[in-house]
Image (cartoon, rainbow, N blue to C red; front, side, top):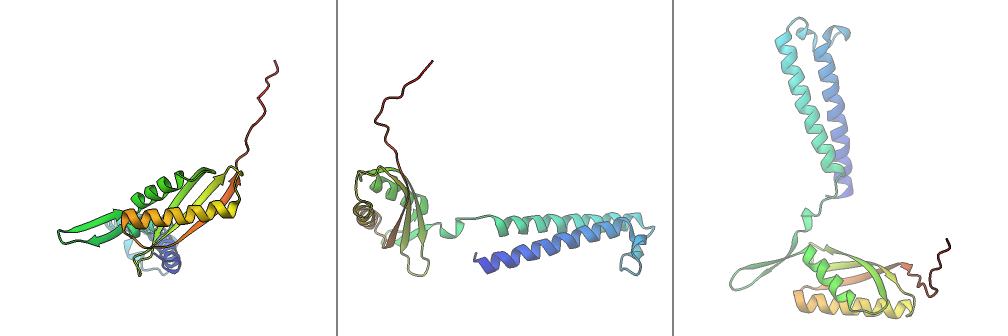
Amino acid sequence: MRLLDRSLLLLTSVIVGFLAIFVAWAAYMPSLIEKTPFQFLEGDFQMQVIVAIIAVLLFLLALRLLWVSVSRSRRGAVGVDHETEIGQVRISIETLESLARKAADRIKGIRELTARVHLHADTGAVHIGFRITVDGDRPFLELSNELQTTVKNQVETIAGIDVDDVSVNIIQTAIKSDRARVRVN
């Protein structure tokens, strides 16, 4: 879901939520508001309960819409599908991330890494993004170029999926502790 869709859904859920609270309040105390469509409820306890139940259901719907609008979901990018003579093969995004991490683990100089794979729905190709911590013993450009090339070749070879690009974000240099730790009592 795009940002505009999420924003509109968020706005709608807030409006429906406030409307549900107002309807529940007006059903409970219809005489406090002059000239409202809820004055017919005054004295009719059964109708007040029915309107209150409807208001609660509206409020629950608003909460669900609010949850959908603010939660991040990866369901849109389930995986990459391949059609074969025998049937269909789906490679999940998680599998591609694991494959990318495995390929990156072979490169010397990387201490920690996280990989994210994003599927381009229109082209069927993927974008792979890395956040890495390096040990600082190799030039950063050399290391990131090797990472990009290795991961792109490995994913394209093993999974048979086009890789548009591999981005690398070096977030930290790991500090080596050459001195022995001294503990003073």
